[in-house]
Each structure stands twice: as structure tokens, then as C-alpha cells.
Image 1 (tube, helix red, strand yellow):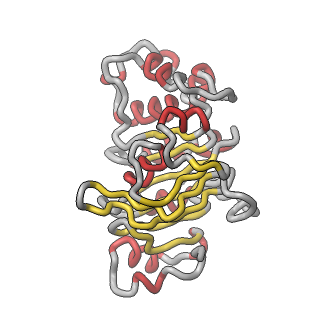
Image 2 (cartoon, rainbow, N blue to C red; image 1 turned 45 degrees about the horizontal axis):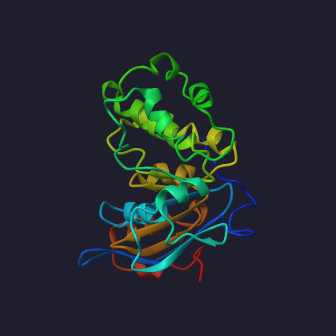
Length: 259
């Protein structure tokens, strides 16, 4: 089982590193994200859970700068980045591992990693450090990523984000399409990644996996928050109600939520 990476004493204290304030995002006539707020503190793993179509990926892409919100703000260390372009956000410390990995299949493993250095900050993560972390990768660095398995491609996508030396790592649906044993192996690397000073905002449909690794969680349903708290503060019944929009789900939002 994946080792939890909760950190006592850090949750909800001090100044948030990443903050979203009343973010609203539209896709044409569809409101994909409706006045969502969150605060992510240094060193924690903040998990966004919810069914497919809940607005999780749109929220992450908005934080990364790939969507512009209709209203609200994105702040990093108190600085408003709402109108800042994605590449500038990367230079300031936000890196996204997108849903579906989005690697360049015709390029080699190492060439894909080099893409991540284009907007890199100074920090501990280099391509060699990635090879040390994902030990299979160095011997296959010249192989085209299209020839890799799904799990191998996911680790390359993570490595590509890490070499940018982000302050906040946005992970979008790491488990999507992967076998459970591969998912556990990838999540098992989180403590090692966090130890270098990273903070993680995680989007995940696999609720049990998210609960294992999260310091705090927030559930979305049709673009709205239905539950917030720590894994220790919520019951399986509360999570199920919030996730599926069962009767009484709105009443779940209370304990552990921020006003």
C-alpha cells in the first residue's frame, strides 16, 4: 500500500503557496468551474476528487494558465497570476503533468525531458536527477516515447515537469488508464519528490488512492465544491455523497471546510 505523505502541523497553517479565489471558468455556454476557491500550503498534497466532468481538469489547466477564467483569481505566494501567460507561470514555479501525458511520441525520452527545461527555474531537479529517481529511464533515454508503456510514459511526463524545478506540481489524473500496480508504484514516488521541497495539487478520480496520499481534499461536482476537509475528518459515506451528488451531499460540507 502507498505510504501516506501527510505532514502533521503544516496543514492550513501560515500563508498559502497557491491560492484560487472564486474561480469561474466557462466552456462556451457551459460553466465548467463555478466559484471554486482553494488554498494549498507549502509541503502538502492537496487532492481534488470528483467524477468525470466535475471540472477538476479544467481547474488545474486554469491554474496552469491554459484556460482564462471568466471571474476569480490565481495567486502564487500572494502574487496575482490570473493574466500571466503559461510559460511565465512555469518560470515562477507552476508545472503541470497533464491528463493523457501529452508527450511527443516521435521524440526520445531524453528529448522529452529536455522540453521541460525550456522554462526551468534553478533547483535540485536535473535530467540526471530524474534518471536517479526513475532508474529504468537512463538505459532507455534514446528510445521513442511512443514505444513505452503507459506507466513508463507517465513517469516521463512527471520527469519532464520536475526538471522545470517547480514550486507547485499539478498532477492531472495520474492513474488514468494504468494498472493498479503501476499506479501504486508511481504514487510511491511521491514522498521522494516531496522531500525536495515540492508542493502538490493532485486531480484524481481514484478516490481511495487520493485519500491515501492527501493532506487535504476537496470534492467537485458539476463545477462546484461539495466537500472539503482532511482524509481523517471525512467518512466514506460523506465522500460518496459528495462525489455522486446523493441526497444530503450539501449538508456534508461543514466540518473541515473553510469559510
